View 1: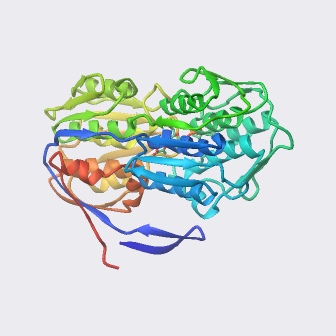
View 2 (view 1 turned 180 degrees about the horizontal axis):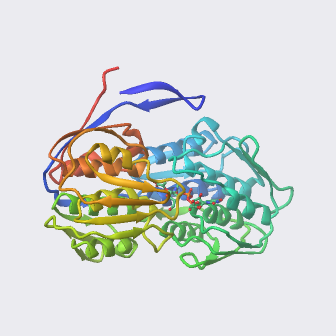
View 3 (view 1 turned 180 degrees about the vertical axis):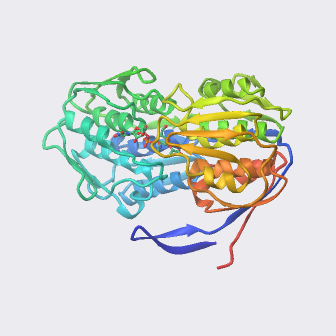
Length: 435
Ligand code: EPU
């Protein structure tokens, strides 16, 4: 059921459904991972820069991707769904200055429209981005990059960027290895005049995926996946067909769900190298992880050792796995600790886990965790996307029925989580709230 609500002065539909999870069953079987949301978002907006027909395969069926496609469509693109996960996007008809602000302000990834439009039209205007509330999420590195390329940027009400002339390549040192800023600068620089060098660039797999997509369209980008990315601007890009990489965070979430339920899950369609940080921590905790070419199998007998986890930029332990891993640490013997070093504030979810019996004390960027035998069922909320996934994992391990509210957060980034979990033995259903 959907409710018409007023959020930040914007009228939006909020999904009022809940998840009911009756836990205590091991997850056993096989799940298949979808395309990576955080790779697909910049690539969808990159199609605006390409100014041609692009076919994108393996797009995850999640609401953030639907919103991104709708933004591009409302900017004038012709967007056709070819099958469940494949879309053709013809951006030749996109108009400048046409970002639907009502949609853009609801998602973080909408800021990729800036780099794409700046590269194509020499100007862009959009709202300040929304997304999960994980503390202050400044955009100074995006601004620094655009300005270095010759654009004038103003962030007083929304974000506007323009440049009278073609952007000119520059050498940019990023003070923070930001994923969003690296991607945005790559977009703006792909068709700039001359060479751009991004130093201290983000190394996340989604940055490599964006570079691969742009290169498949004729761009000249090297070094993606290292700290130094070089972009030699080209005059024109061309459309083509491109498949998005598998979602390492979705995969990691199921790995932890297997471990937390004493299960045995084979997780297909993954790139095991992208999961290395999660795999290593699981193994350290006594979980069995077998790696194949494109799958991992995760088994646990429930005897979990304590661990210390510090989130970091890739290839460090992903901040987007912080809440899910915390659930596992709650089930480990003894004292564990998570230090969050990427996001300002990522521990709001711990209050919800405490309702389920967790013993967690948060001090600044550290969460100290005392092991418990198991969670108990409760009524809890998904406070953000990954926090929602953590609630589901805790509920799957608890004996009894947990009700999870605000599941629209989960559906922004997890494709058919209910269906996938049910197929491996979970008792989980989506129920409508009567309002
Ligand atoms: N930062 C700055 N200045 C900037 C940009 C970032 O100081 O100009 C700081 C941020 O405040 C933050 C850190 O750098 O502390 C990392 O931010 P980054 O820009 O790398 O993150 P993002 O682009 O805002 C993306 C994902 C997040 C994910 C982070 C980190 C998208 C749409 N979002 O956000 O995904 O947590 O990278 O990997 O790609 C999620 O999917 O649940 C999610 C929150």
